[in-house]
Image (cartoon, rainbow over all chains, first blue to last red; front, side, top):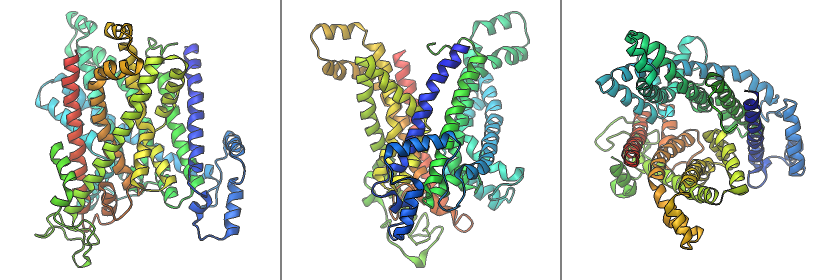
Length: 307
Length: 256
């Protein structure tokens, strides 16, 4: 296990470094003068100079890169141009909301997909199975920037069951969590159903049946338990996608998380804040995937990944 | 269904009942009428015509993204898989790093920095899009290059370029076709996402994503502005996913 962790860590470091370098380069990709883009060409020369100085854009690229990395190591993501506050503080204040939404979306996805996939596998070829697969196909094909407004029209505006937007109690969470979780539930239905069907044909399941165990026990103790292994991986990997998916869902439902913050920062051309948000989301995504790899190895020690 | 969507996009100028950019403020936010079967938007522009023209943008971006990503991915994957060695290791580490980065986030950040525009969207989506094809091609070539027919081609003096183009790549067409179909669906959704965030095509060019974003302001008074462009987008993605599923079943089944 120790060798495996070291191997994964060795891979994690260049990945993180690559991601950080990509994010750093983004702000330097701006064609022409980045300060013109941020403040507008009509801004006063003194303001432009001040911004150039504060962002360090008048220094060589290598020096800027080194400063960026050192600041990052100290937890300093720079200062927002418009909120006049530390990017680290702003992001820290918004991150819990995103985490809350992502976790609830995951719970919603599990609540939808697990019963559907199990029933579909048990009744393979039946109308329930076909309905579950159709639901999954629609879930995969429905972009969340359409599903969100559609749910809003039906449940908030016409039926008045849930608040239209914002963060508050459970009612505020229902629509954003379902919007964000639907895509994940569609994937989980397919994978769990396929894993269950595969597990059903394994010898240990047939042995369990031959031993005279009840069908319920065979399902719960042998089939489902083993099929869950592959689902856990996908779930964790999808959790990373939920973090990035939050950009659109949070914008639709005015959810005060890091996703909406990123979009607002893009609209106001607050590039230090854009850089900070993208960096935090990307690093979280990479770390979640890294932890998934480790957790999967703990659950299934046969995994080696070319150790 | 896909053929119908493709034909509609291709012949949009002939099929659209009205100019998608023509404004008529006296007829804004109409739900349905004889002149405007799907209604009008806040500037009185015909929604049906804008949806037809919007399909052009989505499919154009999707096709261009897939073509470009496929070309880059196949070239890099073939080179990496056939020659191996240090270059292969370096290229694959680059692929690993790019694949570890959330694709849509990079595309959003890229277009946010470079500004909206069709070309920026295509480049942004290709930044990570090629990696999947490269990994697929490399893996397949690694397993194919030790097969007898490749040894025979080498023994007959075939040059690497000829072996890759004439012997290896034709064998990769089925998996590439499947991946390209799902890639097209993903690119259509990604373009929609970027346009929805105001980072796709620039107004007044119609795009399904930007139409959905415009419609959000009028959810109470004009829900048709949100319903129809989204429906068009979902039908397109659904059709592509269905084709992808069918291809996977048929081609993988045949391979087995």
